[in-house]
Length: 392
Image 1 (tube, rainbow, N blue to C red):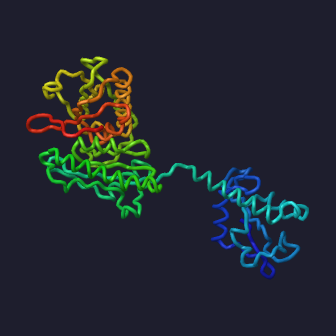
Image 2 (image 1 turned 90 degrees about the vertical axis):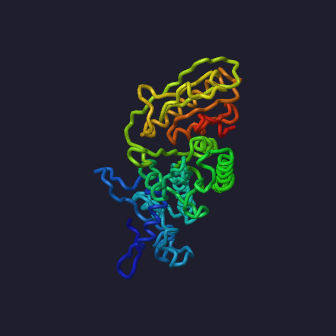
Image 3 (image 1 turned 60 degrees about the horizontal axis):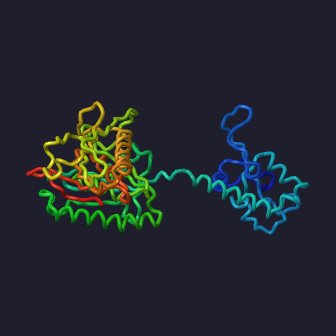
């Protein structure tokens, strides 16, 4: 960029720091005609064609374009007084015949408008930052370690985003630590009540405040806990904030999705359906299989909706690709839409689930609390399946 000033018999370059500001603020385009200034018309190679056009001339002289303006000498070789221009526009605004049209005020206005527009348009690009939400609990005495750096690397490699750890969360993202709660081994009512209260506290305070203050526009969710609590976590992840949900893959001992494109298909099977039912059973066989004879006697006679993979035996690592989770979300939302359309009187779904982590979270998130039935989640105990938590 030919930005120079006369010192004795030669002209000195505009300082590099100011030159860089001029290019960045203008977005590489001529401030006046908007021509892209990093591409030649002859060879189509990336050639820097932009020039630094001074609004107030470098030299305090009538021979310097707009040089008699009272702007101090030390402010003339700054980015605030230089606009990025193509050779043609630069020559035209500096020609003496254009002096009465391209005044200092007019050039400042055009520079300001152009740079504001560039900043606005580039600001419309998707925000690639994401706040990491980790929920860690024990599962029948077992737990895993999910460190901040593991989550960060997973987001960068699988999510095409950059993890943000806001100062208001001590640069740790958002964490829900259920590991210190007593009673997990038995999974009794007190344990689930305490876990729900802790999840509600984080969502009602830290997350709500972060959203309101624009600290959070996207979440990356990592969770390891008892399945009913995963569903409850998903229910708190409403659609006001975008979220990516991650799955822990046992075989590969990683949280990163694979890059394969083909997805697992899922299907809905129905039995005993009636339009006027008030309660039904939802069985989800993805990571394992729950047999009909395992259901408690109290719900054995209710209509059943069953979600299973197509052509694949359920197994723990059935979700390996992000597309697999997307396919599961589609079939769950389809089931809820079907209930809304054909079984509107259904108020409760008794849920028996063998689900991977991410699918359990997605089940809770896909439910609309305003129109869909309550989810009564069952967990396996020594005596069989028992209801432990209700999402409503």
